[in-house]
Amino acid sequence: MTKGYKMPKGFLWGGAVAAHQVEGGWQEGGKGVSIADTMRAGENGVPRVEDAEVLPGKVYPNHWGVEFYSHYKEDIKLFAEMGFKAFRTSIAWTRIYPNGDEAVPNEAGLAFYDDLFAELHKYNIEPIVTLSHFEMPMHLVKAYGGFANRKVVDCFTKFAETCFRRYHDQVKYWMTFNEINNQTSWRDPHPLLQNSGLILKASDNWEEKMFQAAHLEFVASAQTVQIAHAIDPTLKVGDMIAFNPIYPLTARPEDVLYCQRAMDYRYYFGDVMATGEYPAWIKKYWARKGYDVGITAADEAILKAGAVDFVGFSYYNSAVVKYADDNPDLDFDEASNQEKNPYVPRSDWGWQIDPVGLRYSINWMTARWHKPMMIVENGFGAFDKVEKDGSVHDDYRIKYLADHLLQAEKAVAEDGADLIGYCPWSAIDVVSASTGEMKKRYGFIYVDADDQGHGTWKRSRKDSFNWYKQVIASDGADL
Ligand code: P53
Image (cartoon, rainbow, N blue to C red; front, top):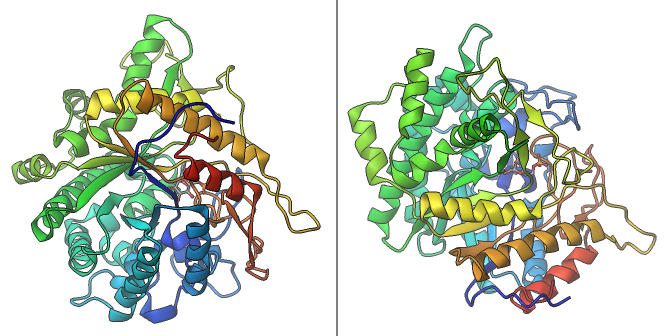
């Protein structure tokens, strides 16, 4: 149905995936073992088991993903058929530096991405590349403790520099760390490992360790921005923030104030990366808690000189908090105090579905960070049913995406937001990051495989495939 809104000319319509969730080929071309390669599957409410190494007889879904490593030409052809102008993926760090600390990169890994990017350009599809998307080399975790150690900052910037030198003619848009702020859920070991390569002891202060690791990631990211610009001033480097707006449960002033602190806490990552400075409140917070985050004067200069060029963000859901009378210091703890929003529905995985929140978020980021923005993930994880004739009638996914896109279009048309692209999650079905399931599907393209990696890997078009094709062809007018 035509709603009358259109995205501007040159808008980057596309779709997103991440290397570890699609590629498979986990031992092809000299690839090393990443933290995703040793994660077993969980399910809704059942966490993924994280082994220290690949154990015999266990199921590791990221070993096959959706076999994109061997199917990428076929898949890119389908992306082109949908009319993609852009495709977001990541470079598997372990294909380029299998252990993460080698002196020279692995040529077979570099060559794979040469071919992948060339294939995209054949169809005028612009690659958008995340450098670190939950797939750090396992060796960096075991040998150095991940981003608890400054040595890993050097490993990352070397990896980034290798990629910029090799691909700067092919790839203009880069992001440093995927959903860097997921680790605000620091009571859960999963995001700490995925974001930062941290495996902590019960006696550690997990929140302090999170702040320390995130700081070294900010330093690495800011250095990366500077390296990119020195190699090729036309490169654009963004951060990548998991954005879910937090609302106060009521108009009670204490609820509103507490909510403000919750937003400050979840999004200080964006403050540091967009402005090059830590906000004042967080220094007070650390002082009150007795935390030493280990920030040097040299770090502060690096942060200031390495602000990002654009803000990439994912948007799936929104959240609600309320003030508790026993918490006068306004300490935000993501693991508690989450309330249900009575005004929005929920997915089968409990995610609160809130399209209007997307327009609110875009406007919030505009007011706070003053950068061009790109939606690099937005989508609906659901059980899909394959009909006898092979079709998938995913009208729930079409509705989710259409409702969200309309709000993004209003943010541009009515509010003047500088939104440069929309890459929904996911271009094709992928292995879920949080649960490791295949059956939690997001794609426009169905892949015939189950949670155990059994299937034909055959690709087929869901109804949403044809819907999105018409959306792109009409610049977003036909939702
Ligand atoms: P899955 C947590 C909360 C929101 C988004 O998520 C998240 C996560 C971490 O799992 O991840 C992003 O597959 C992430 C993608 C991921 C996608 O959202 O858990 O950048 O890698 O697949 C969807 O349902």
